[in-house]
Image (cartoon, rainbow, N blue to C red; front, side, top):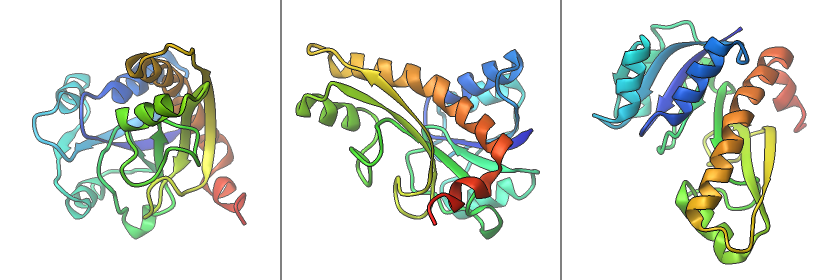
Length: 192
């Protein structure tokens, strides 16, 4: 069972998904702590309502001081909109979800509706999400899992975002279960 720290910057929709799937029995994990880099966000209120320890930390150093007080196997970036630098012991254990099929529409500046707008402007007929390990470069670490969604010619940016988020709700827990089953090193070693 994975013990997770969850980092977020906003409403906590991914935290909701994790919580529901853990208690529904389809995610083999426990949330140990939730940290936001933004004060007053709904995600922190949700974490507190669920009974998780919840904190605000402005940077990686402060976040890592908080995480150090908890037994954590992985750090999940769940809508965390800041480049995060993990402590040495957890460097290869940071997992992110990105709202495109990496290696397209990823990297610095590509997040949220910016990704979906680029997909729409290019006329893509598919999009999706990628769950991957994160390192010091945006969207560069080993891929754990990808899910694809079909787009319609007339889909709006909002409709694309909804389709991709629905895929994310399945992909992130599935990817975490794979990490729990196969271990972290399996995914890093695939790239050698």
